[in-house]
Length: 557
Image (cartoon, helix red, strand yellow):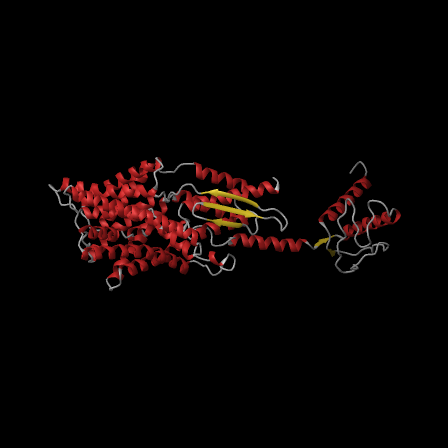
């Protein structure tokens, strides 16, 4: 394979890997660092990488006077797919550890992006329903609320999946999902009112959290904190539009319910005693694990994700009871998630992003958004002011979640060792990809190879080989003096020929002179000598000696 073709294939591999990472919600800093580490492992030094919200570009220049080779790739879709993210992360680690070459790596990437999932699509729909059912338990809802939240989530997922296939923008999908959640909750309340009391506000709040779970708040904040302001601004704008779509859909659903006589109640706080906290933590664990299942996370991660979500909710309740604000309580819980996620993800051999995003789902501000919309819908000044305050609190909670998780990753990861090896803006925590450009095992192998190469420069050979090599050099010098215009002519001290390497230095050993003159005859019986010569000369000298001994023995040899 030519160098130019290998270079083109390497750039294509790096861009395909970056596309999978960026479309799965990884930060621009993580994508850039992973692409750079992959390129360096495949032999490209100092590549130029640019990551934006909609495209990836990469260029390399082989020499100061050589033209640059440039490739660009558009990111056309964004879908939470933790199965592909995990497989690509493992591939990058295999390439850096030199367990996979370029050809096999390109084949594996092609299989990853073209193959389907191990779980069918209806299983993901059930996962979304399980997530909303867990949120219903977390909010203190009854069994009827849990069932209604599950059915509403299934309906919303199927509706949004159909709209995605129709290429309808995500903003309108959020509006449709919010409106459908509210109308279904109101209708279910009216139908079930004859048999059982159903708090529709809990159903709506659970479905709001489902709609907020797919919004990349954390990626936007991570990009802004790591210096990618353009990409961070674009992601923040997308997150705000998606959130506004949810608010518009829920608000329209509340107005429609009121118009047809289906008044929606305010959301009452759940129990905060020990029994209530225990049940809420159980519901949060089930919701987080169900979100991971719906996002195609590996099965081995579901139990740890649930445990971390339960711990985060417990921390939130404990801090909130100490008269801290909701945003501070959620921020400290997110910090605990980020602090533990790095170690947990390392044990599970998955990117920390999978653990972090899934564990923080129960802490999303669905309650604050619904309460703010309900208060604003009452129309009086005091309720409107309280509603606006609730909406600001919801935005603060979203920012606190992202900032707390990233701060926890800063503390947990060994960033300081790598900060000098990458640009300053890339020295943040890694939620996806490698934290080292080379593994410890690879570094040990490289050091061992360097030591072996240094030891191979000076070899111990028999004196007979040394004498024959000197005789060959003497003959070459004699031929050069007899035919100064010939092809074998060379300057003294730099003898070369078609079969001999340039003259090597001879280190002084026992009975061996450090510099050999052409006319000087070799001294007999020198014994073993340490000589720095090329392996080609040693091989030819031994072959010549073996050929001479074979001729002396005759046909009976």
